[in-house]
Image (cartoon, rainbow, N blue to C red; front, side):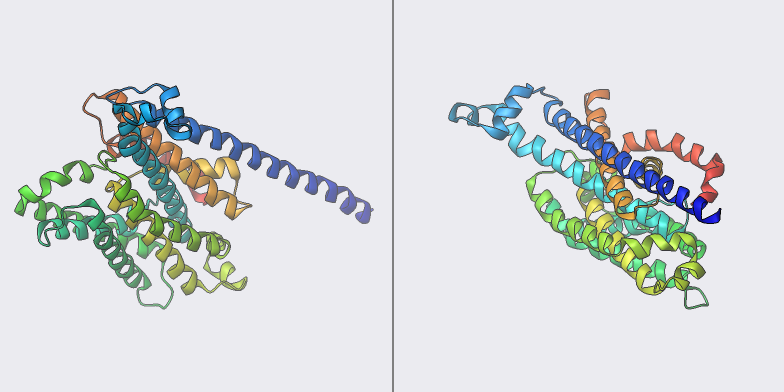
Length: 354
């Protein structure tokens, strides 16, 4: 009788796995369509609305007559790099948010919780205020350096008295470091007001004025961050089961946490350098991805978080152009959306399930 029951359960389990895979494929296809639609809207919508047919001809069949028009110049030099950057930065923040929530086992964790964004922002502030860096492409190395130092400091504080970093201690250290670094950045802005005029939009989290040079500068670091995240994704996901269980399954906890911090440093450092400290994307996106993809496939969950992040940030950038003629920064729009979501998440009983 027990043998028959076991045989009956096997087809049912196989059917569930097949259904879950089919659902993930359908969600990925739907997300791909939404990404394309949001990218098209980002290129079309702005202070000057460009016909969709003009965009199509510019991308796939440009003529000599079209190359001499203002629309062609706007698409190639402004809208297209900005759209690609929004997709890339959104993907980086979404993936980094998932990694942060996994390694800290904190459902309210945001990429900025380890002070990575604040460290990058402070380093860029020092570069602008005291090193005389003016071009956005020059910020990348300072941003990565600041993000790396902040990550190491939080990791060392998180270790506490023991050899294993404590997720709660690491989270509190990140919050404290973020407050301190943000305060120092504000002081530098007061001391060097003229140098900071050009960074006001960047400090609010804006993609405005970001060209192909910025895209080319940050793309390799974000891609490298994704490579590290995907290669170490499986052992990273086991941390959600607890340190003892993960260690019992053969996971080297210290190595996994260092790898995660390196991926977060690259993703958040490059994203912050390109678009400024944008919050709430890394907070909201992983929760949506878990509802759509579950937790059985870590690679699918990471990829889904990246796609949802691209959609959210691109949509926020487009909404900023529509809601206000002078363009609301994307970081302001995500804050308006993310604040209510943060309250709902804080009140949710499902937080304990993470």
